[in-house]
Image (cartoon, rainbow over all chains, first blue to last red; front, side, top):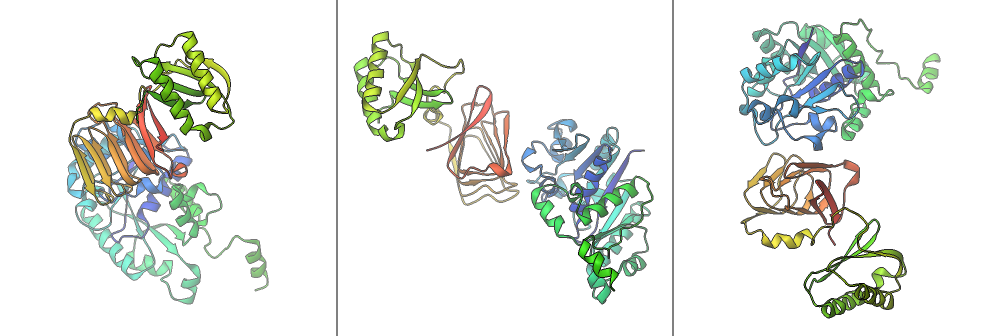
Length: 262
Length: 207
């Protein structure tokens, strides 16, 4: 069953684009055919994170306006031939496309790909409405901050109003040490407020910044802990039952020894 | 400066392009003069030489080679009419530019992400082209700054259009319907020129 999944958050800067890139790449690594759609018209980033920026010739607006065929605008990933990107236009804005057009686009992509991942822009205006128009499922990304959780709550309400029921939650940038000290909301605190199923917890990880700058999603890095979390999330999207990674466990040998003496 | 004699280098050696319909004496003198200027450049290297353009008689060719070997320390290992079937650029692309009479848009200041210039004619950008910014022109594009965005020269089909920039950084270059990418790790921090030859985009330093 081919699915259109929108990655959204309401608040900006919580990691929607990073999540989209990593989940998409991870699904492709597992052999699924995937297309990443950047719906953030005018402030596109997904191409940069994927390292495909200088290969863009046509974009989503060219497809919608009929300047090119859909296949011409899809950019094949550097490494995985079953992973494609449909980039956003940078010289236009959110009003250049309507929800109806987006829905048609998603339906035509549905024929060729198992997973269509839509990277939603921040906010609840036109861009958000476009991004969710063609989606079957939604994933809400939030960080353990009051403001991000507040916005996520608003988004969940809007998703339900648009008939996108049971969105899944990703809690991004969790710092266990801060949670322990009581300085950061815990996973339980967040799920209690939002009351939706959690599909993944991603630790705060420097490797995300490094990999974003290189244009190589962190899931490609075996050692990255955030990458591991995203790989698990993509397996859960496919329906596998994977237990959550232990955030406390720091994989280094030294920490393991230290633990033994505690 | 007269340009009846032009030196070009390719991977096989030096090609000396001689203008057609010029008296041999003039060519000879100009070659002498140019060699004098470039004496240090050629230095002590070993190279192949070929002549192009004017139809030289055998003895004339030998005379020119004599001049070369007398004025420089160049060690000529082979002389030929042409090494490759590949066509040489007739005259440097920049000189062809004079023929283009369409109007030119000069933009002062950098173009930032999302900003876009679309112009019938040539475009000169005095500033940098940031990533995400774009210039489309039916003629040439000159960026007096860093080129990191997308440039599309000769968009209406003029394949003699060129793209020149002070620093060619990670970007995408298009001339007519030819496209090439400059990867992140191969930025060129010297003035460069991109043009079409043999249905390919060539990039060479502009010195």
